[in-house]
Length: 167
Image (cartoon, rainbow, N blue to C red; front, side, top):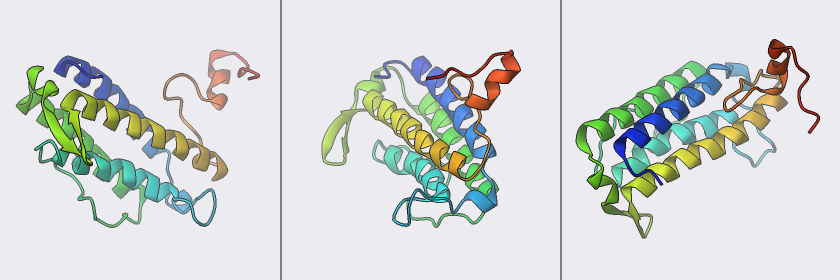
């Protein structure tokens, strides 16, 4: 669980950059990619990551810049990425500007439960990582390049003069 503002700044900054890196590889033509007709599309997953930031954090009293929970999915990858960056950067600024390490122990009503704010921030990070993983599967199906986020992606091993791991 996030227990200091410095911890959050360090982790969120890295995860924000990873998500931006992934979003930069999206193309407008791939946004409709879904695992099946009932599944979320790449556009919907990316927008869900984006709109969850202000939606979840509004439950803690923060008001963030960025798209609203019910805003429609933008028609282009560039607009989705812009919305994500605005919300993610706003979160970092608001937490650093308005919360303290003690604030992270404050509990808020989160979906019918009482969550400490440090836990809420941790949950938001894990939520984002989870959906990025789903996105990489759809991106591969759409024929898009996948950037390494926490280590090299399969096609990046060659840049290190190595073969990708067999497993």
